[in-house]
Image (cartoon, rainbow, N blue to C red; front, side, top):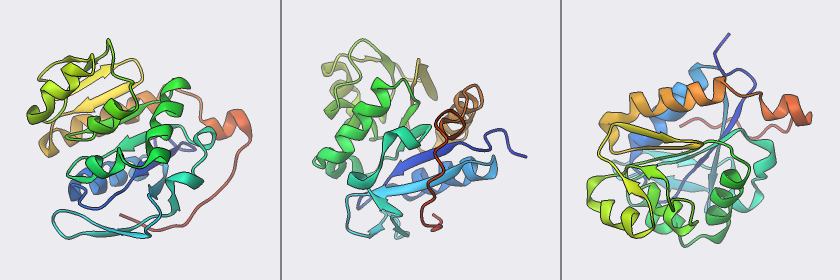
Length: 192
């Protein structure tokens, strides 16, 4: 048994994602028992900066935050496109309002900026966008992983071990949504 059996995590996808920032957290979460559902903007298939191709299980518009325990936002160039997709911005807002973990790495916090969930919160990101986080009201720090309540942020691919572990620990400390709501929706079984 994994530490987070029964948890469902939604991971966002868009073109030019940082490959390892999708694959590594997804593998870590699945190895600990979580079901990970990949949601994109509706194009079906996405290509990472390093050439990985991943299919979405559902579109962001189809995703129901009430069915999931956490949200993962990878970096790369994808967040620039994600922030133009209102269903993705709204997903961040809904997860945040519900107090569920929202985990963003590298350039992923750009989507958190668009959702206006960083004001007054400690966070980190790829250093090149630190001023963007500060201008959005975040207290930016240069640390491997930063947890401020339900927000989990990391700087770069080298931080993914700590990033994934922080998310797994937050999920392990919470009752699974499916247990609380009786939700049992299953999605496609594609793997990153």
